[in-house]
Image 1 (cartoon, rainbow over the protein chains, first blue to last red):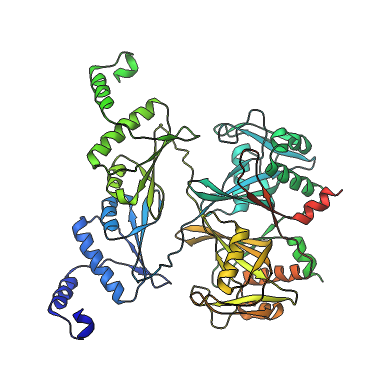
Image 2 (cartoon, rainbow over the protein chains, first blue to last red):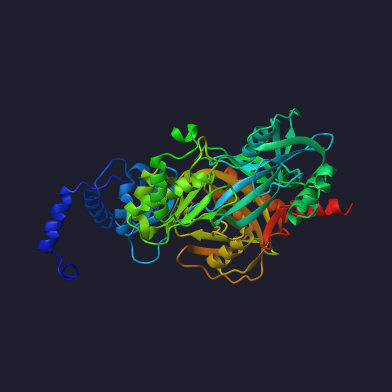
Length: 288
Length: 288
């Protein structure tokens, strides 16, 4: 109260300012949104950690900082309880750390949401004889006695969709292939701990034909005439699989354009990023 | 050792079996992959928690269980340290809980990965006069003095892409619109705490034209002739934005087919799931 009516600091404030100078503040980096990021990398007892944390927050507040991010490695989990007591909450976690977050200003926070989707891929690998590469899996929800399906898998963190689908086909069946197009994709919710998933149906061109299955995941694999795959009751009785099968047939027949991948990178950033688009449609427009 | 050579239990084993019967095992549900899921929902001191946990794991091991999932609410963070000491690790976290995981069998685990992607949307809202809805944002990395951009935003957890982009346009500019197609998408890595993102460029048809901007996020918004948007140096100097702008022009010119959304749901599951595909290409094939 006195601070707002009287510009000179009170005795208590001077004393606490004095004490604070002796407390080693937490080392932090600044982000582009007036936030600070702290990576805790040395063991601390919780009492001295809380003192350092409180003094640091006071300083960040004076500096007009907003979000405070604290990355806590799993071996320092003893500091998780003190952080929660200081009103930090969880932003996300990975196997070896928890990212805590705190919002300094009054009012609603603009902390960005955590990752929300897992990305799956399915491979339509078709050769010149209109035979498609199909597998039977050893486990999983989709396991059905006798039903043959396209190879599928999950995109690894940091992996391109076009690379992930080629990798999965190679791992499961031993067949080498080249990415051609994304033919369609499907979004699904509450697939996995409340998270959503996006599943990309991709067309691949095989560059080898010999099958060597991954015994841990796959029961059997074979090249099968596309119409035989499509006629299976497991396909015909699923609205989704039937749609996807019709898309594949339209592609074989030459009537369907999916999204090819083109590399793009901005001037400021040399990392390669793929843009997926209807390359034929764009070409027709550009050639006018 | 004795257990494997002698079928009758040792004295120690009988004693520990006896003790275990008096320890209340943790309540769990089973999952479809020989795993168990525990939701801790009552306060416990860490000593009795560890006793119950050890006894439970012993039982699950005997039952041939593999993965153990423990969902720990933030108010019971005092049990995080004991879990880590018992060799649990983090699978993921959301603001109010951490999901711990543990693998009982010898050998590598088949625990599925955490969500890896955030989903962004960009809106190409174009009217009959070939005017496009553009905004200037108040903050963010893409803020550039004088540059006009498409409205963009992040897909909420559980939200469809086709709904998210309509919502973002309405929130930022007040303009009501209908989803038409995904025109292209781009995958980017290490965008956000090591996570990846997928950005979907969507075409929308406006059903209102009056602009009322969201003052907290948006500096200004207007309807702008498409060629004026496209001619901006911010677009022409970015390989990515130039590509996307060319895709939009091809769409205006009628030479480009993106992916429309069709609802699908399987027999076993009545939740609506959207499949995005080249509807015109599929139609041409079906009409043969």
